[in-house]
Image 1 (tube, rainbow, N blue to C red):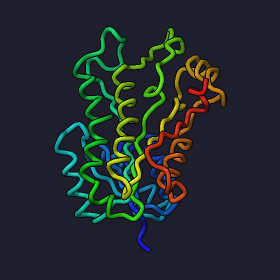
Image 2: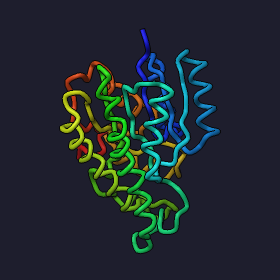
Image 3: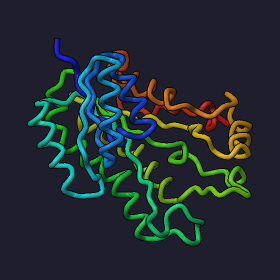
Length: 256
């Protein structure tokens, strides 16, 4: 029996690789889409060797309007099918006006964030919809953020070299609503859901981690594997009657 195939954007990153490994452990072939060719190639080699599945990558810049038709053509020619789409890519770079205080946020940074975090998930879903509809288990999971649901508590950032850009929050809030919209348009052939992570522990400043954990009912930050498990569930047959939903994986951060 042929394995199902999942395309994961931002596949070379922390969450992307964790999702790929979780799906591969369930015998799903994975295709990583990322700008970082070297890291994506290493990840594919490791995943293929460890899980005995096909792991490939497609180099792609999701901020380019030409990317979506190119991805469709590559997927169609190389694989001939697509069962799952995980929109996980998020914008991070050194564009002026990004990762700065509110008063300094810039138009160019906002534009780039929206292209990668919000426009790309829509146009990838649009371009790949014909392939996803042909699958007997077609599903999309969009990866958002708790800051698409609630405003930031700026007290946890006080005195630290960390920011919480408005552009990021706006794009992730829009992504949650986009998932709901797509779930009605692509039904009944394709299910569309959101996974909304809380903060993920990645060696941040100890003071920040302590403040964050104090505000979290489960008393810790998330791991990449916490998020990967939620994505895998929503793509699985166990979630066959779940669409248009937002699974919040935040240790209870938004519960109070």
